[in-house]
Image (cartoon, rainbow, N blue to C red; front, side, top):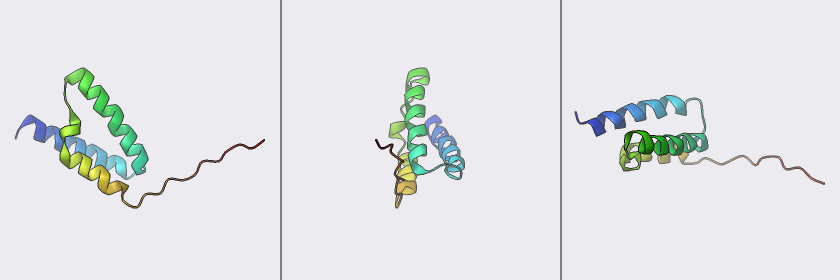
Length: 73
């Protein structure tokens, strides 16, 4: 097994576990933070992991964000 495949599977397992607790917008936020840190610290570009992005896109299907309350005068 190549290192990239192992990384993909580990990240898929992590995001699958997190998807039970968080909505898709939070998962995308985690993905963005993780992508930045892995690129800086380990020189790994997870944007090339097509299985991971496909998983996140699949979780986003049908998601409707909730409108946050806005203060009025």
